[in-house]
Length: 156
Image 1 (cartoon, rainbow, N blue to C red):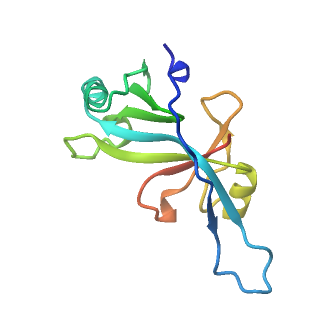
Image 2: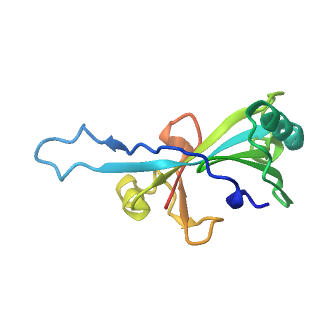
Image 3: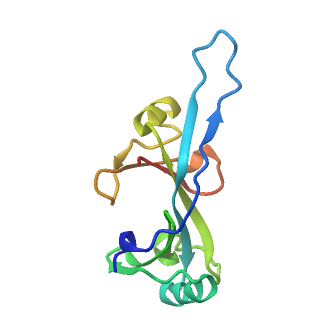
């Protein structure tokens, strides 16, 4: 079974807005970032299969898919519309000395990804590019933005 074929749980997405309030009153209209949901959360693990087994046991969310390739091993679980992606730590953070699985990144779904990227600019976010999911695009916020956790924005 593919992760997209998993049972969808009843979830509610709350529309979140990030508003730039530092603009002077005579400035252009405020920028509003509409976050319409969470696409996926990324967890780093040394042993993807063992971590996925523990996630399934503790949460009841079965492992939906394992992907092996040049990018290592990845495991996927699903809770409603949110995917939990478990990735081999050595591929993403080879110098990380952690011995337990840890949260690593977050991907949120936004409206108007091109407008967001234009507003934030190339010093803050990469240009939107095709995502793995057909018809969708993704843009990664640069580490220099100082968020502390890797963040990407994805189109609907």
